[in-house]
Image (cartoon, rainbow, N blue to C red; front, side):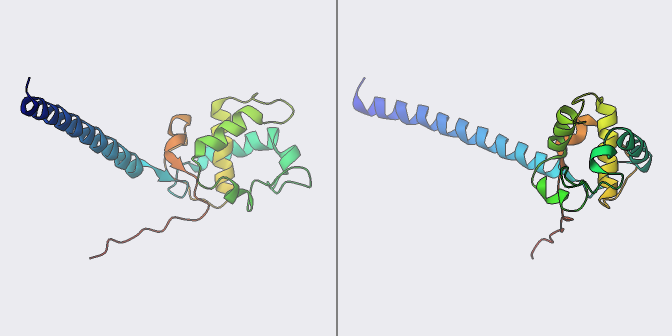
Length: 159
């Protein structure tokens, strides 16, 4: 092969690699945008009032002896209202669920099932004045729910 043929052949192969890499990057970007569009906030009514009421019952039976009946905590146990919110900022609700599911109740970690833990999370959200909705919180939706301590502000597109 002469030099011109080798140069032409390498440019064509290199071009294909570039096009392939650009295609992969475009697919990754569109998947990321789709995920960002489907991500919701704890401010979007992600639990039902009935679920929060069940959560209240579970909470009183399993959590209140340490965190208090009003979720305010004490000198040894952190509160689950107020200053509790910023601690989870920037995570998704599954991080809190995982912690509650594996570390609580303190005297018997992991003893409660997924249903009881999601109900307790619903009660904690309600106790922090987050709005309820018509759909119950479920373990399979937790990763898509962003833990925003402050209500997200919708931004208008600039013209």
